[in-house]
Length: 395
Image 1 (spheres, rainbow, N blue to C red):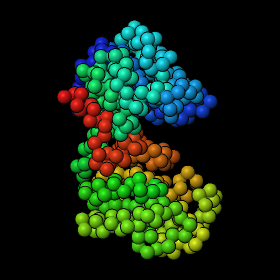
Image 2: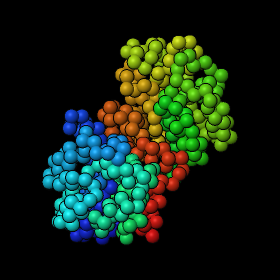
Image 3: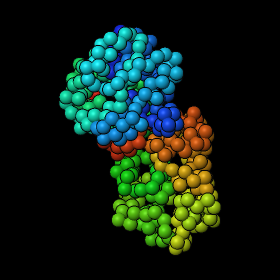
Image 4: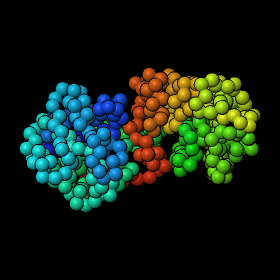
């Protein structure tokens, strides 16, 4: 797979797939992290005298033009960040857009309107793909967050372009996920949390082939408690996956991978409970109570495991971190990872990203992935459609 810093793009017209699916309220961007993450690629291309045509989706308009999901606020904000004018197209395909693209001069930027205003985007329709491809000479994919989807703007378009490559953000994702986690420095500790085992089942199975130790927390640990014969009160649990959880524990033991589950949990009446209850032994969750965070003994245990690590991958919080009453475990682990010296620390998944930023520690991690579903599928060992398309195009 080729990347933009390996291509001759001087004076060329580029179609760059970015991920500007950012939260907007009342026309104001609430979190611009995804936009900021794209700047290295854009600045590199501008220095080469390229003309940039940017395309992205926002939300799920389902093939209809929804004014609240317009990318217009992004154009203004991006212009401020780059200190240059960003032209806004009225659509992403059509005669007017084609005319604007053909007249775009080197060093200028044009942002296309929301790709998902057309059904052809998610349907990966050849006609829509061809229309996008006709706007430029070189295609650049820098949207890892959509790499697990086979859509027109990241897969179909490559079939109508002679030259394709990944952007600098995609290159970072490839380096950290494809290299650092596939050939990790040991000890390698994976931390898996979040709500459901069902969304992480294949990830956990695949991780057992590379990790030395596996930490499991969050609501998904409740299913493992059941697998050990513990009662879980009214905690969120997936009873139909108890056998799968047992299978993971048995396979880990057979492979010599140490699995660390919470030894104590913080109780609450509900996820909205503002007053956390006492921490109790993981085997003693009472009826009517929910396990909503890891307890102090578990924090100490997990910190000890992380202290030895040379590579750490973290996906999924340790509790209901959105509620400050149950955020202590997740924040404590973020701090423990941030203190590691000489270790590669990789964070993936939207919620985990939020925890790290909430803790004010984002700059202390080696890499924070911009992918949610893409990150998980990569960890499952699956080939991402966008990566495959880029590789085939560059060959």
